[in-house]
Length: 138
Image (cartoon, rainbow, N blue to C red; front, side, top):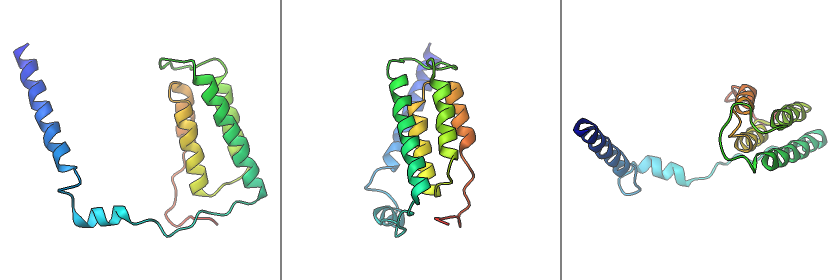
């Protein structure tokens, strides 16, 4: 038991040292200055088909949230109907090719709506593309 207490005390001390270095007072000036600036890139304009896809995907995300609301614990299979609605979200999202920023936002919202369903989360992780740095609204 004393070895566990010593290990616990060492872990807490290391975490305290790491946390003290992450505060706003001792940060790097270049990093804090860069964090305060906003991006100059404007959001991409969506065409009619993309706006429709975003509306469908957003409705699917709302349904996923309603399905998961009564669930309290993580399970691999999720709530009844949750995997089907996750598949519908993937199909609706695939109906049009949204810009990367819109796609990433929708995918993030969907992942948070199914975070207690293992297979649903894995399916959405598989949807995530490797984005090219040069790909933007085009």
